[in-house]
Length: 64
Image (cartoon, rainbow, N blue to C red):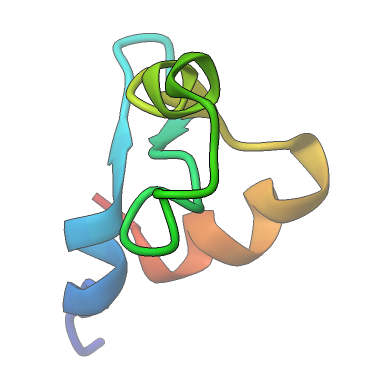
């Protein structure tokens, strides 16, 4: 049986927590931040957990 490869682009964007959930960073912080409020940009710093709808897709490409 061949090895299952990890999708490297996904590995740079997502990480698994100790309990097995998948952590992601929030979108919308790279550009066009001049028109956004400082508070909203500050809230985009925090990471969040992946939704249950996306868990199946992402856990297939992140096997380890």
